[in-house]
Length: 375
Image (cartoon, rainbow, N blue to C red; front, side):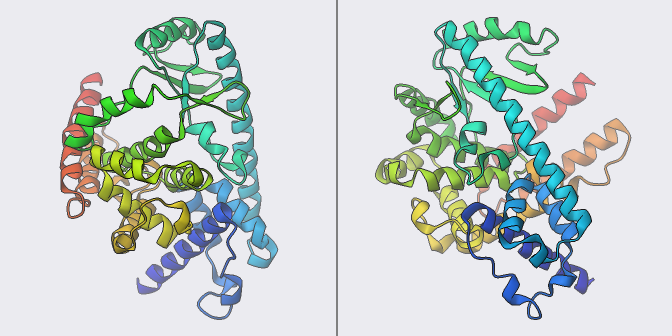
């Protein structure tokens, strides 16, 4: 059992080092360790690949491998092959999504609509290789309720079978239309986020390198990308892709961020401590340059390491957490099993973030009851 834990730790360390190379181009300390702390011939490369899949980071890990050299790393042929195949699928997915985005904005602009693209392909442009960031769906934020309603009317015919009029599947890609953003992780955030968002909407959006796409202003994205990541973390889990989106955005835009205003906004929204814990994780354990992390505080390094371990154990949106594995086949028993697993995942954070953890429970219960009632 002890050897298995050691092997798992080695696998995680190699995985994280490759992430650092893929994201930051840092020198990989693996090769000098051959014969020392690591023996390259004994690395579980299948385990490294599975970590990359669970964290939706295959493209970035592949970039790290390519930078060092797959031959030098002694990556087995079968792992190399499926890694490259997955990268090709990621590239194709990004090309398809960018093409759809361009078409959507052409349709919307003809009717005077220019929504902000949230996260996704806009944030991808902050990566060393944008087409290697694994894409998800398309989220569009409209700056007024009238614009949102008009967009729903314009785009809903593209998916006549949609269960919800503002959640459309077009070309096999989920497109979500938003008139607003909800943020309920703690009382202060729930109270003040709406006012802050309305203030942000008065600022000018930014043109993206993707033809015609409009991104939110830097002041908005700096906080929103973090809030979105934080919300999903407390609701069940995130993958390193969400953390990487945040880090890369801060890194690319570090000279455009008003740190004094950022500090005031984080205090106003009640998320300063969470920002500092995630910031320490980013700098101390994921290679983010300290100069790129506003309000970095090394005092939170220990908590940052704990958060990183939670993320590594859970995988993207918590799907790979061992608390959710071996689910019974019976629908109701399966729901009960998953519910208990989700509760355990939420409660693990109580010692660091008591309010945020406990406030996630009612959301979980309500969602579970709704799914059972649908059944």
